[in-house]
Image (cartoon, rainbow, N blue to C red; front, side):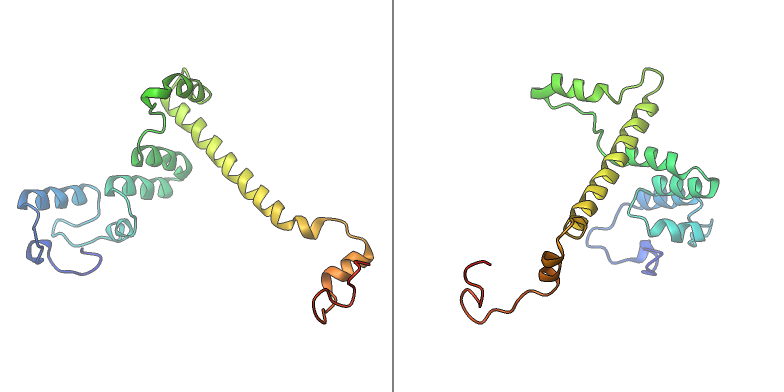
Length: 169
Protein backbone atom coordinates (compact mmCIF):
# COMPACT_ATOMS: atom_id res chain seq x y z
CA UNK A 1 0.00 0.00 0.00
CA UNK A 2 2.90 2.34 0.72
CA UNK A 3 4.44 1.68 -2.71
CA UNK A 4 1.09 2.56 -4.32
CA UNK A 5 0.85 5.69 -2.13
CA UNK A 6 -2.57 4.76 -0.78
CA UNK A 7 -1.98 6.52 2.52
CA UNK A 8 -1.67 5.10 6.00
CA UNK A 9 -3.04 1.61 6.36
CA UNK A 10 -4.68 2.60 9.65
CA UNK A 11 -6.79 5.22 7.81
CA UNK A 12 -7.61 3.19 4.68
CA UNK A 13 -11.37 2.58 4.23
CA UNK A 14 -11.30 -1.24 4.22
CA UNK A 15 -14.62 -3.08 4.10
CA UNK A 16 -13.17 -5.25 6.86
CA UNK A 17 -10.08 -3.64 8.34
CA UNK A 18 -7.33 -5.91 9.62
CA UNK A 19 -6.84 -5.98 13.39
CA UNK A 20 -4.48 -3.29 14.72
CA UNK A 21 -2.19 -6.02 16.06
CA UNK A 22 -1.84 -7.50 12.55
CA UNK A 23 -0.94 -4.07 11.18
CA UNK A 24 1.64 -3.59 13.94
CA UNK A 25 3.10 -7.06 13.32
CA UNK A 26 3.29 -6.30 9.61
CA UNK A 27 5.18 -3.06 10.19
CA UNK A 28 7.52 -4.83 12.63
CA UNK A 29 8.32 -7.50 10.03
CA UNK A 30 8.93 -4.86 7.34
CA UNK A 31 11.20 -2.97 9.74
CA UNK A 32 13.21 -6.15 10.45
CA UNK A 33 13.54 -6.76 6.71
CA UNK A 34 14.75 -3.20 6.10
CA UNK A 35 11.69 -2.43 3.98
CA UNK A 36 10.53 0.49 6.14
CA UNK A 37 12.21 2.94 8.49
CA UNK A 38 11.34 3.31 12.17
CA UNK A 39 8.88 6.03 11.03
CA UNK A 40 7.26 3.47 8.67
CA UNK A 41 8.54 5.21 5.53
CA UNK A 42 9.30 2.90 2.61
CA UNK A 43 13.00 2.29 1.95
CA UNK A 44 14.55 1.51 -1.47
CA UNK A 45 14.60 -2.15 -0.41
CA UNK A 46 10.93 -1.88 0.51
CA UNK A 47 10.14 -0.36 -2.87
CA UNK A 48 11.91 -3.28 -4.53
CA UNK A 49 10.09 -5.84 -2.38
CA UNK A 50 6.76 -4.22 -3.26
CA UNK A 51 7.29 -5.20 -6.90
CA UNK A 52 7.69 -8.89 -6.05
CA UNK A 53 4.55 -11.04 -5.79
CA UNK A 54 6.10 -12.97 -2.90
CA UNK A 55 6.07 -13.18 0.83
CA UNK A 56 8.31 -10.27 1.86
CA UNK A 57 10.66 -12.62 3.75
CA UNK A 58 11.28 -14.65 0.60
CA UNK A 59 11.64 -11.48 -1.48
CA UNK A 60 14.20 -10.13 0.99
CA UNK A 61 16.19 -13.36 0.70
CA UNK A 62 16.27 -12.92 -3.07
CA UNK A 63 17.35 -9.27 -2.88
CA UNK A 64 20.14 -10.14 -0.42
CA UNK A 65 21.24 -13.13 -2.53
CA UNK A 66 21.50 -10.94 -5.61
CA UNK A 67 23.62 -8.44 -3.68
CA UNK A 68 25.84 -11.22 -2.26
CA UNK A 69 26.31 -13.07 -5.56
CA UNK A 70 24.53 -16.29 -4.62
CA UNK A 71 21.22 -15.76 -6.41
CA UNK A 72 21.07 -19.20 -8.10
CA UNK A 73 21.30 -21.08 -4.81
CA UNK A 74 18.83 -18.85 -2.99
CA UNK A 75 16.32 -19.00 -5.86
CA UNK A 76 16.21 -22.76 -5.30
CA UNK A 77 15.51 -22.24 -1.61
CA UNK A 78 12.96 -19.49 -2.35
CA UNK A 79 11.18 -21.73 -4.85
CA UNK A 80 11.08 -24.54 -2.32
CA UNK A 81 9.61 -22.22 0.32
CA UNK A 82 7.04 -20.74 -2.07
CA UNK A 83 5.33 -23.89 -3.31
CA UNK A 84 3.80 -27.03 -1.91
CA UNK A 85 6.36 -29.78 -1.56
CA UNK A 86 6.57 -31.48 -4.99
CA UNK A 87 7.63 -34.65 -3.22
CA UNK A 88 4.21 -35.12 -1.63
CA UNK A 89 2.79 -38.50 -2.53
CA UNK A 90 -0.81 -39.25 -3.47
CA UNK A 91 -2.30 -41.92 -1.20
CA UNK A 92 -3.16 -44.24 -4.08
CA UNK A 93 0.27 -43.94 -5.79
CA UNK A 94 2.78 -43.86 -2.94
CA UNK A 95 4.91 -46.70 -4.30
CA UNK A 96 5.36 -45.23 -7.78
CA UNK A 97 5.88 -41.75 -6.28
CA UNK A 98 8.64 -43.11 -4.01
CA UNK A 99 10.38 -44.65 -7.03
CA UNK A 100 10.16 -41.39 -8.99
CA UNK A 101 11.44 -39.37 -6.01
CA UNK A 102 14.46 -41.62 -5.42
CA UNK A 103 16.32 -40.22 -8.43
CA UNK A 104 16.48 -36.83 -6.67
CA UNK A 105 17.21 -38.06 -3.14
CA UNK A 106 20.63 -37.42 -1.66
CA UNK A 107 21.73 -39.22 1.51
CA UNK A 108 23.91 -36.25 2.58
CA UNK A 109 21.36 -33.46 2.50
CA UNK A 110 17.75 -32.69 1.75
CA UNK A 111 18.92 -29.44 0.15
CA UNK A 112 21.04 -31.41 -2.34
CA UNK A 113 17.88 -33.30 -3.25
CA UNK A 114 16.16 -29.98 -3.99
CA UNK A 115 19.20 -28.91 -6.01
CA UNK A 116 19.03 -32.10 -8.10
CA UNK A 117 15.33 -31.54 -8.68
CA UNK A 118 16.00 -27.90 -9.71
CA UNK A 119 18.81 -28.92 -12.09
CA UNK A 120 16.64 -31.64 -13.64
CA UNK A 121 13.84 -29.14 -14.21
CA UNK A 122 16.22 -26.58 -15.73
CA UNK A 123 17.69 -29.16 -18.13
CA UNK A 124 14.21 -30.40 -19.02
CA UNK A 125 13.02 -26.84 -19.68
CA UNK A 126 16.03 -26.05 -21.88
CA UNK A 127 15.61 -29.32 -23.77
CA UNK A 128 11.95 -28.50 -24.42
CA UNK A 129 12.86 -25.02 -25.64
CA UNK A 130 15.57 -26.36 -27.94
CA UNK A 131 13.22 -29.03 -29.31
CA UNK A 132 10.50 -26.43 -29.94
CA UNK A 133 12.96 -24.16 -31.73
CA UNK A 134 14.36 -27.05 -33.80
CA UNK A 135 10.85 -28.06 -34.72
CA UNK A 136 10.08 -24.49 -35.82
CA UNK A 137 13.31 -24.37 -37.87
CA UNK A 138 12.79 -27.82 -39.41
CA UNK A 139 10.98 -26.74 -42.60
CA UNK A 140 13.78 -24.27 -43.38
CA UNK A 141 16.47 -26.82 -42.59
CA UNK A 142 15.21 -29.65 -44.80
CA UNK A 143 17.16 -29.98 -48.06
CA UNK A 144 14.90 -29.20 -50.97
CA UNK A 145 15.56 -29.66 -54.64
CA UNK A 146 15.93 -26.44 -56.63
CA UNK A 147 12.46 -26.80 -58.18
CA UNK A 148 10.83 -27.46 -54.78
CA UNK A 149 12.66 -24.54 -53.21
CA UNK A 150 11.45 -22.23 -56.01
CA UNK A 151 7.88 -23.53 -55.58
CA UNK A 152 8.05 -22.98 -51.84
CA UNK A 153 9.19 -19.39 -52.36
CA UNK A 154 6.92 -18.65 -55.35
CA UNK A 155 3.82 -20.86 -55.44
CA UNK A 156 1.94 -20.90 -58.73
CA UNK A 157 -1.24 -18.87 -58.79
CA UNK A 158 -4.45 -20.74 -59.30
CA UNK A 159 -7.05 -19.69 -61.83
CA UNK A 160 -9.91 -21.68 -60.42
CA UNK A 161 -10.60 -25.09 -58.89
CA UNK A 162 -7.52 -27.19 -59.44
CA UNK A 163 -5.54 -24.36 -61.08
CA UNK A 164 -3.69 -24.64 -64.37
CA UNK A 165 -1.87 -27.80 -63.33
CA UNK A 166 -4.77 -30.15 -62.49
CA UNK A 167 -2.90 -33.38 -63.15
CA UNK A 168 -0.28 -32.77 -60.47
CA UNK A 169 2.65 -32.43 -62.80
